Image 1 (cartoon, rainbow, N blue to C red):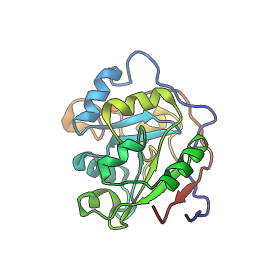
Image 2 (image 1 turned 180 degrees about the vertical axis):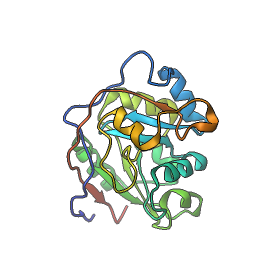
Image 3 (image 1 turned 45 degrees about the vertical axis):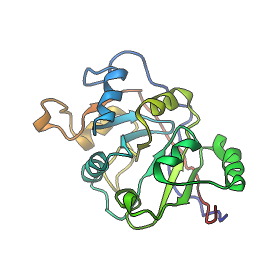
Image 4 (image 1 turned 180 degrees about the horizontal axis):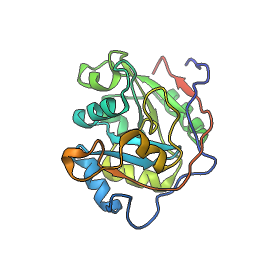
Length: 208
């Protein structure tokens, strides 16, 4: 196992929880979960900050996020998963040693880079032959993941710009229109108020 230098990511002062009721475009949680299951993307409060989220198992959703964020194509996204079992979606198996190590660092919100050489997931690893995963601490957000599956969730901003701390800031990046479909860049916004972040760490596990 090799520990990398700290990578500037973002983590909130407190866990972000999803509010009951309706999101900014008039859809409730059940409806935006349905959107995410059908190649949709949106701005959602994750376990860390506001993320521009979409299904990691949908090439269409991932492609849309790269386009909307104006992100360079050689920069993979971190993938949020509910548990180690979700790694099976990506043909990844862990040794007992790696599993025990990861279990110890989950409480610290660390993202773990694992080998993933499969060409089937090129749209995710972008030729790096590895993927970064994080298991969120926030139980309410994990419930969403259990329903919609693994999500790519880069910060809600255009590449090179500061992460949005509010939905108003996110709308300045991605536009205020979610209806009608022909005018929208993304499909929904979920407003959780202001969310601030702080640095977190990414670790790479070279050997399984």
